[in-house]
Length: 448
Image (cartoon, rainbow, N blue to C red; front, side, top):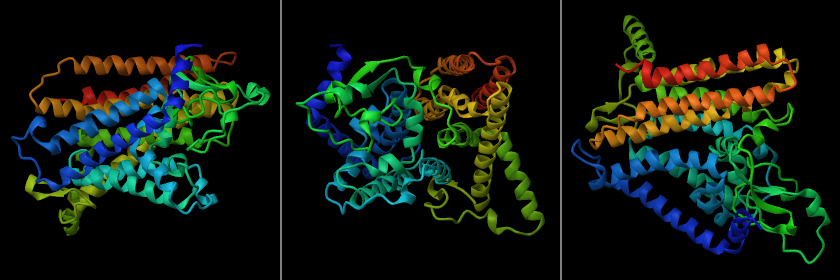
């Protein structure tokens, strides 16, 4: 028995310990989310180690979210199954709820994509990375929704995590790259004779016997060793991408990747340093003044609608809000739509239009890298406020970005094996080049 298999079986045996760890994370999460909102805004002299608000900001946006995303690539959805506070609370609530059936509308595959896009947009409008109240509204609101869904539907399950969580689609994409996963041998499952272990509670409502890949599995270990057919194993981190089936009915992952994870997220991280955003705002402001429409220039919106902290000299006008929406939507359409067009051309050049989705998934490493670089920019910013120079950051960013582009191109080359590669791979090169150019602008091109 391999050490990975022993680890998976150990997770099943020590499920109670895992649940205790989950509740410890819930406690830490609640403290970091709630207590800073009860404190005054930090002044310009405050530092991480002497101000709870800044410390919570650094933990959430400088450490927590960037490295949760990284953990998906390294370990699959281990965070979801072992540590996520929302998942733990939703499952706990469902054990005491009404246990209703899941309505058809809730099973719609587009909810994670819609949730990610709306949450990302709203977070920029209220400056979620900078203010504790905004973080409580978005993260706390998501947690409250998870509890409510748990109270309503299916006892002992994580309906929220399976169908509605705004980041579940992103996690599913990145988990495809994980070098470990719980593999299921369906034939051995069928052939296994009694006595058998009781069927485990699969909280995310998966059909364990037919489970393929790591994208949906929460890696909680509850099914490890079941019928001798489930075990934690190592695999190639390219396997799930290269074996993506040619199917048209599962297009939401490609849409989320192209228009959300790549296009929209790039705009969200980029607009604060973009001269294009400034030009857009100035042009619209001049037009409004020339037409004597001055009310959009006022910054009187409540903080939960647009950033409004006059004591910090940080308030968004209605025009700011409109420009943010336009810029993020434009980034999603231009970058995501540009990639979509190049991928369509690549699939047609290869002679099979059904290749669009599999080729889109080869951009997953670059999508995940963009999220990590964007979120870790907050990490770098906060550490520089503490006086750290971090001169090595820019070269490291360049290495990570180039490695991600190379990985995507290699995946595309392998995916096109046995097909006319020339023009198709050139289209993939243009697609990765478009994404790389966007990140180059943010980290190098627009820096004075």
